[in-house]
Length: 502
Image 1 (cartoon, rainbow, N blue to C red):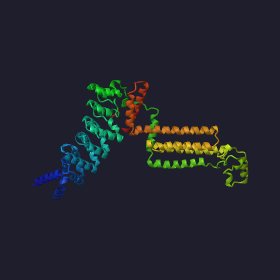
Image 2: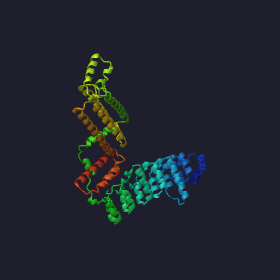
Image 3: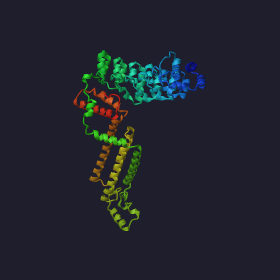
Image 4: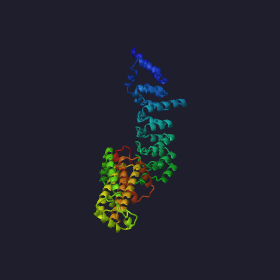
């Protein structure tokens, strides 16, 4: 008797789910408060949320998500979540399809991570959206959950692989546009279980337009598990148009490619002379916390301000006047010092020439002592700021500003001092030193990006690789190729990346 009653209640719940009857749902909950929790304990079952999502009952789905959030990630016996069912095209009428789209959009607004729920064969709702070529939902899914683009199927295929394999040109265009705008084009380098990139699949399925779209975004000469390049596949398929296009864009056969150092050989090799210092500096830079950077920058700015002011107003002041001996009065004389010093400086002024106006009053030895220490403090503080500022492209405007500030400081020192050989040499050496440090900082930014997976690194790698293969083979090109390959191996080891490195 009890079992029959429970079965009748479940059937009533299923009917309410299909019809979207919220009042009937709460009537059943009042009769049997445990009805939803009893469904939740079953591992694989069609929950009421599955049925509501399949029928496109948006308000009912939202109500159930509020009552039982766990239903949203539960898989039914077919290995599908409610969002999978809302995405899958079982509707032929536009109104029904629009209703299911509304349900899917409502679900991801409540929980964006539903886009990443892995169902049968590790297919996510994003993958099914691509298969359905549902461009509206595809755009919504990508914007709601950007990390979903990294999810791979059981065959290690990305959404881009699926779009090319299923010939969904509209979905592919949306994916390429989103990847470009989000600087995530490294996804295009992902390889499936057969080590095929999306370009390999496009050539295999003989989609010339897709090959044209992908050829500038991926390595055209990447090898798959059969050690075939895209050009080799085009030759096998006897597709003259694709073969001609790839060859014109620098495509090569596997036999003509230079050999690359395997990862195990790279790990066995000794580190180069620049590898250890770069690794150490990057490690130190990564250890510098935000609070530590703030303290360093505050102290360095105070030192820069004080030392720059010291160059503008050195002790003792400057010789004053307009070039006429009778009008030259030093700031030292105006300070109310003893008559002896006043008479001495007055007599000294009578013999001063026009070219000393605006120069410091200090003796040359005192000036060297004061300005030497002041300059060392100023330059050291500038270097500390160079190092403490984050290594980002948009921060380099501040580095350039500091470079011009240093130039202004050195120019001020040159103006107020006698332009002798020692002073001129010092200014030149310091200027070159500052420029050298700025270049080193820029180099460190590139090196750090290799270790920290900067967004522009995959783009640079693809551009450099594709350009290299259009250059005739020569010793210089081979050396550059080996250097680039070692950089990418460094990148792989340091980041422990899961995707394959060509």
